[in-house]
Length: 153
Image (cartoon, rainbow, N blue to C red; front, top):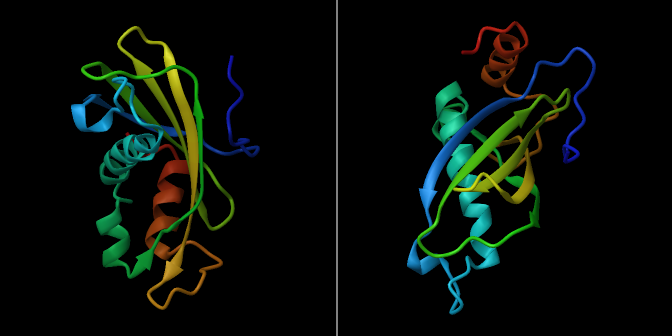
């Protein structure tokens, strides 16, 4: 069993998760037919975008609220290679955070359900002037209240 990247605080809701399927394209592999290591963050992004849009906390939602959410940390653990033509499932897990940050964990599995890559990102909240927000914006706090109350399907 793999240890999660983020610790769940007492009383916090379970992580939210969403998965996407994708096929490895020729442009994503090196001359040996193996996915180039720099492509994995974009795979994480595929799942993060779908999860955010599903729950109303996607990039356009933050943009409408005049909030920017840059990535502060990115970590990738490579376990097995993905190859040209293979399909994979990318799962994003949004972990609860009591602080003003967004913690995403990622898993990529191949068609044989083997874990091939894991990783995480930490995003911060900035206002339009680039100033760090010490509290999440109101709309994100409302989302967190619904999440904690079990109102998200």
